[in-house]
Length: 219
Length: 182
Image 1 (cartoon, rainbow over the protein chains, first blue to last red):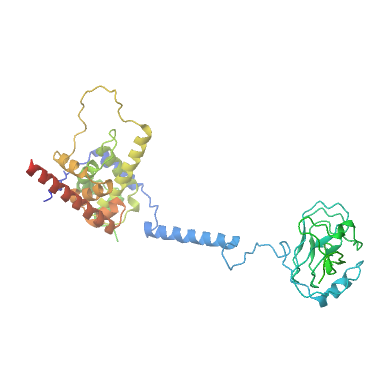
Image 2: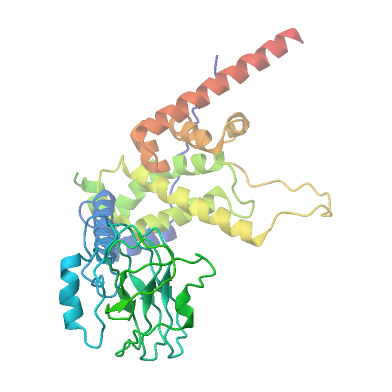
């Protein structure tokens, strides 16, 4: 059994000073809330917040499937190049001057590995060495800068499939080609080992084809 | 919802309307504030109530309703004033230290003399449950008025009151059993 909690509240009488203050304050009272009350205000604030967040998300491209108007074009990023067809290699070769003709590929299609140069080119050419097991698909050749204008041959030393991969340079792309191989062309790849064979390759920054030389086992 | 005559007159600054509102709600407001916990010893319930009345007069243009529902709106203002007072007292650290002289000083008299027993009983509850029981069972608010005063939904008020009363019954049964055994 619970006791009765009700407390009889006394009837208090306001003082005249307090009444005067209440009267004056109420006369100068100005509504600050909309007529709908706080609920309408909350709904408006929630709608405005959602709108702002959605707009910012759309502009920044964070929403999946929606392209941002401020996103960069594909020319600024790392382009994914499709494998070059053997028939189109002739057109590329004809468009690029000072390039020796490369023998046609004799290997079945395969995949190739990318050639990554990360800067500090000294002007002398350097062979691009591949050591086998190419699969026929090309990957972009990335140079990160400091090219000096001379090109280096692209050496493939094994298991080439006849498809070439582009060489992408970002700075100082070369305008000359040096088809003659250097001593490095003999395939001293500290990582991948030696390979050999004949294959079509692109050795300069603009995707020109170069004669590949190597001493590996070509298929 | 439209204003009734008393509220409309109070918005115009009529002193008679304010007197009627004060007579209707001031006593319950003080009783309710005295039952709440965490009040600063330097700030009495009458101080909080007077400040709540002044704020209500300043913001009366935002209020829409009749004179009976004015109580819930006023209690909500008083609840926020009391919360601000608690925060200020927490920053001031005005609690007495241990080396104060042991002179018994009577505190401020409560508005209702028989209120101490109710306060002791409500001290067993959580602050939330205490506020709900004080609004509904002590002061006599309806569930809607208590919900408006406490900033809660009516369902939350009902649930909190149900739990509070169940706890009070359980403790009363336990104390009765202990008294019987003694």
